[in-house]
View 1 (tube, helix red, strand yellow):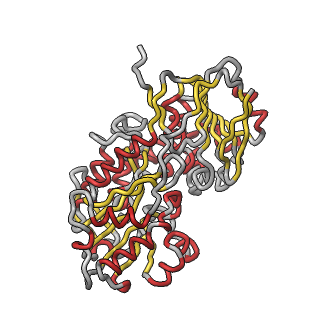
View 2 (cartoon, rainbow, N blue to C red):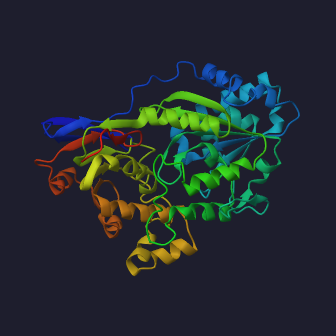
Length: 427
């Protein structure tokens, strides 16, 4: 027997496994973090992809909106980047702090209080620059037009009125949009509720009650969410993107700046090279962690690890996920969808009043149909049982239920940054 360690909340959990059953311990590519973040950022701003240098785009007297991600994306540690980006704008470009507004791209999430905003941008930045929360239901949203997917595009007033919009985000695999970051800073980041719901409704198949087969982790061509998001972003004139790429240890490893689409696409290619791990076969069992806090703060957030690792398990196999989930399901409505699941109204409600939390709940139920999902978590089993999952607070009970004897296993210490990829097609 050998002990394997998994991040759990702000601590770790150790699991004894027969190493003869372990096909491999899957980790992302070993890439060193940037040795000088400031130098790397400024270099990317001076030599951007398919764009003039930022020093030529940002000019004194312009109104500039800097769009940053909200607290649910704090793993990207934008607080380490924002000060250097603002120094570039003020010191290199000559922009006045009074002409810069930092807009937090909350999407449909709640806006943070002052303490949270200070965490996102640092105290020094908060005290010097204007910082505001995007509200998807604000009464001053600006209409920009309608996409070819019939999505009416309403965006944040500050963003719409800016002479230059700079978006700071992170490239990462995304189960709905293919990849996160980039154009998602606009839609859903600073868009109106009606815009977000219409776009995200493409997550569902047009006819059957199932996820749209055109969406998925790493899927961009033909993905209607992605294409719609791109159309919305293209409606923002003078849009400049700063894309962060984290290594498998969640350290900043690459920065791609420039054209809002092309620089982001370069970042996505890098993410694929960092996170995809070739495996020779699928396993009976995948044992994974979400990566600890804040990745496992809730099932809503932490189930992204399931999105990633299920590609390494056989159909009908078992996924064991270590997810503390101190905030339970996450959004209050998340577990509320169980009622609609049980009374048969989930399809009607999703199609008439689509919400991201509702879809993630539905998607997690789909995953539980494809694999046996066992959670080691603070979430009560009664909350996830209607979904087809099971939760345990006792590790021994979980391992007994998993019946691991004789089964092949992949160990994935950080499911947030690893995507198993079958290296050869099974016959």
